[in-house]
Image (cartoon, rainbow, N blue to C red; front, side, top):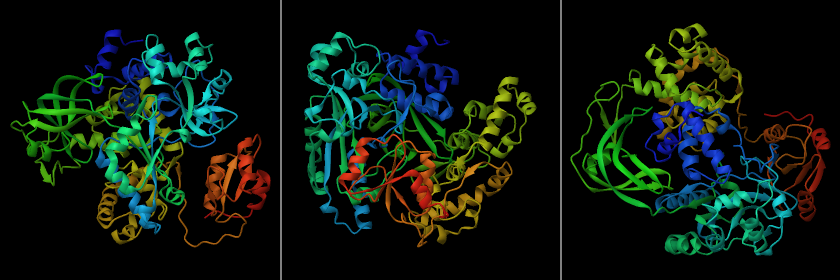
Length: 637
């Protein structure tokens, strides 16, 4: 351990900023924070750990074990992870009415796309529990884990844990919680937070007397989300009664609640809206933050981003807010600086968005502003683009150049060691492009001042990044083209292979669903700007997993075309590969058995619940080997 206790406290209080921590210090702090939490004695909040420190670790070292794998769950959890019966995705967060309103607009747009009257859509609101998430399939209870795989903690039911409302097992996702009133009366002297107590119920070690008593008193419970009291109404009802809905839902249960979850109930609309890699698009959680402070601004510092945007950062008088000392916050853009008078001596209203990110709500007392005329990195004359102050010296600006290189490795996410400290050192020795980095050998790294072992590691990571399979859309997104995040890259590559995208014109891109004319123009310009670099990197033969090209009106001659199927049980083949192949030959792969399901494809060790559901809905059950035989001659697109 290299961090002293005083250093740990300085990091907790944000007296040492993230930018001041070395990679080794950041890793050690995350490890110690995670270990302290798992032992029931957290040194920081879950939100600070996830969204400040772990997020920074992911930015610097995206392949580190704390980022890529399930965090150690302590002695109370098995090292063996099992596939969850259903994905347990995160819930998108909103911290303002404006964000909720945007979500509603997306719902209304989706309704138009499927010719559904938006006023017929019902939305339910339930309290967002602040407990320990799990999934109960009726036979086993699993931790949420990484959302795909978790640990079997069925022992908590064997210890006598009851289901909320005595409603029975097998209701799917929910949370282990303790009644708020009971915690304050009986447990607050022994546990700092309810979360610490809830975690203690799950560990393999024997329960202490207080935990046994809480279970016996049915104060500790597993609460299926399906059993939560709910408000339900139309979009108009939400628009008219939003504050009342929030206030009522936050108080409707005797558990710790950190928000309200809104979700669509209309099944067709839910299927149409779908999900991205993190969230269901038909669901959102509103989290209200009322903790605010009036803070004096000491100064405003310009920072240069990857795209040339100059962001004002307000340096603040140290202020304790939501349990942390805040010393700086973003001023959003220089249009706001000029309009509201954000400068040295001004007073701002400060909050922490979701109790995490420091955010300036408004300027309460304006002061004289200082608007930079030249880029702080390259001295180029800055120009206004709407509210944004921009450095247009894209190719020569050191800050932009280094940020682009760092961004490439961050998005690639299959390498270690190429954080900003390494990139700065490479830049100081004349490296300006990603392709130049891939040309380096071990001796070149050593001559730049890297140690022999570090040089070997960096070279190994470069080779790994080219040889380890990654999605083609991720590789394209790493170039940082405007309007080409990972989602848009994936969407584009469904219509055109990565080797042919540079031949696309604005009209062709604009014709693709999801791309507007303005975005199409920016994308074409962006592709032109990176083409030479793309072709330079192509010689390293990156191991790209190619996105299947979407084929319209292609006819397949097999029994499952257009049908909804569910895969379950232990398969002889790799399940994810089977799903991918099924989709490529015109099959709709779904995760749960419903009345809309056509076939259930089973391997070994199939859960009884899936079989019972299939029988209930008259879904045909087919063994894996029979399914494979029926599609053996079908070729994917």
